[in-house]
Image (cartoon, rainbow, N blue to C red; front, side, top):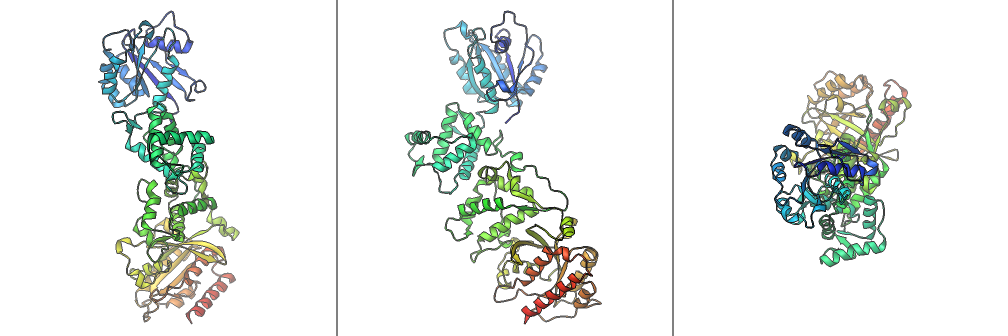
Length: 599
């Protein structure tokens, strides 16, 4: 909503523009009226809407057309004043309406019939044709500066036309709400329908009322609202709850009865601006993230996302079918998850995203693009449903990784593993095996639906952690990970050399732990075209010995390697000194674990 309102009064000479302003300020009709009143500012605490209001007078005698254009460009609303005792149609109204500066300003107009004390009849018959021709005219007010009739109301309507305009909400010709308004109210209904049954029950209506107007409805008032809907439509109330049609009807009724401030209050509470778009400040609240810190969802955010999942998982199978997922994202202006998401997280046998996969994708988005996560939570109404100031309350910004290394402990729950390997070495197979998919399953994935990321939960010494795995990234930002996986194809003689080059160039002098993966271990092993064997190279550089891996299995591929990677990431602080005894013990245990599982 605007922080202030600027009202411009225009009209022919001697229609009483200046008198209206002076009567408002002094609460009495002035004996002497100047050609033009100086600009006045009414403080916020004395206006009904609690917004500072600037009132500007225009005098044709003292000002030029250029000055008029300047004032029009600065105005938020224009009051066109005419004298009701003038039997001819006021010439200034059509003149101003055809003005180029007014057409480009696109501000609401109010017709003001002054000097009503001089006539016994209304001027509406003269004015109605003009109002019907120009939809930008919000209303017409007849008043009298002399006896103070409707003076306060005039400026209230002017203020209201700016703060609660009818134009974006309603089409008077068709007598119905505009499509953008309907879309916004449909989203608000869906967000407020907490159990997704298509009806706002009494509890949901009270929560909605309290959210928007800071007070619940009394039981009788609630019943009266539903009775109004029942009298006007047959399908507006169902099972004693308000349907979407009933909800839209109520807002149409509010607007038609001149109570569009009620609809605007609802729209603005749910994040909409004057153009019925979700406000940028609502979607992207301020969130400061210091360097070398990561972003994670906190406990309350996971609880909220769990409630959203439960809301749309209608068949209670702990997975979201394509129809359920579409229903969930119906409150978004676009579909945020593409087919690649199904190959980034866990799915069921039908390829539907499971509860675990759903939570993993939200965790991934928060880690990689927290602004996108804030936007998504905004569409879902996080701050409204959880009664928080903004979506920023859902985010935990972790402390600097260097502090974790110094203190040799971390509170983080999400860790990143970057995979590096030559083309054809098996990176995609390794990635998909993390989601429990063997080679046979991977062959069914379309090329355009493949993902460079995979995320899943891993238990590290009894604690659940998220491990994010991705490959083919060598930018500075992407190199900042928690553990590195160097993957080579044991059947390709030139595959290992790529890993050695990446290690020496980027990670040999870093404190990031590395693990060498001997992929495609089901194939015959070829001698690598490198001076040292993979085992010797690992020994020379104090990294664990190569870990054999294959996803060409009949059963679900083993996750042991991912447990090791996650453990190395979580306990990275113990591995940052390559010559320490802890490091050798850790390598030894990794090797023993590998031998045990390969027997």
